[in-house]
Length: 70
Image: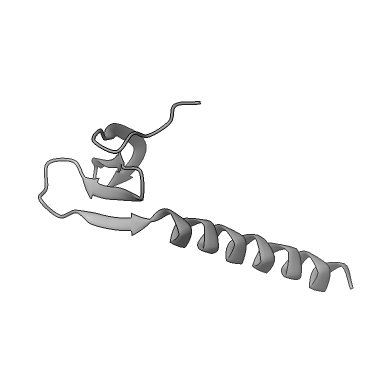
């Protein structure tokens, strides 16, 4: 596993597309930056918000599975 250091960022281009342009993710120690390649728009998202959203989506899926089984 690669640890993110305070003064450095890691940039990765994803396979996801927005209007035929790839989405680029910049990884920082305390947040993630998301942008569309070739644009100046940049959205920073704290890591804890990403974790909370993942938990909410997982809970919704489990609840839907329980309702479908009953």
